[in-house]
Length: 243
Ligand code: GLN
Image (cartoon, rainbow, N blue to C red; front, side):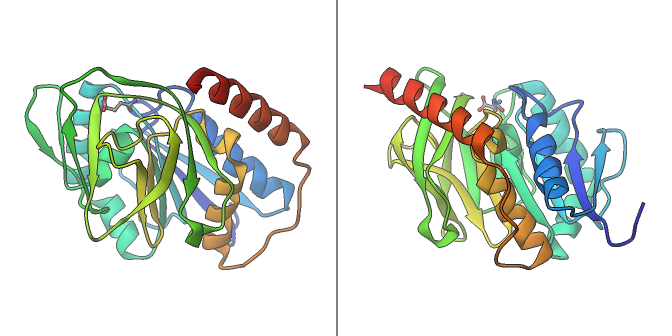
């Protein structure tokens, strides 16, 4: 392992990796390799300590019970909070997003403390589950093309004053609060309800994480043909389904 290698940490693949979210780690890795950026992928199971020296942390979605177990272990471990305190980049999806917040409702129907890394709080949506394709315009400060993804969650998430919505929805439920917002972000910490996996459908998000980690404004271009074809196909199918 080279000291200059970018350290990509995939948090708790044994508990939080639904709907192909592991693909996010593969895409970040691949986009780095295509630019000859050395990257070391570190998969951290829930019985292992979270390394605090990672550059990028990815945390995926999960069913309600694994989500509670993951939150308990991450709180006890404290490593992810320390890493963020050191300026690490975190990208989280669905259950992972809820865990980064201050609180969510667990599988026992009780409020479960989150990590307080992102100023969001999740409650249980009493209506039907949010399932389906979503599309939205990502916060313009981030300079990214529209977000496309697939959501499947019962929780609704309220974004507090310490964070900003990640995207404004064209369709889908996103945060589920009826205000058209989807996900949240603050500095180098991001959360979304978009599975897909989201990096495969939105590879420029992976590039954004790499640019933040390397502290550069641009990366060498890569062949986008495959990604563009997938994006076009998913956007067309989702737009048709939502019409
Ligand atoms: N268990 C959470 C919810 O239903 C997250 C689900 C998920 O990660 N897909 O809101």
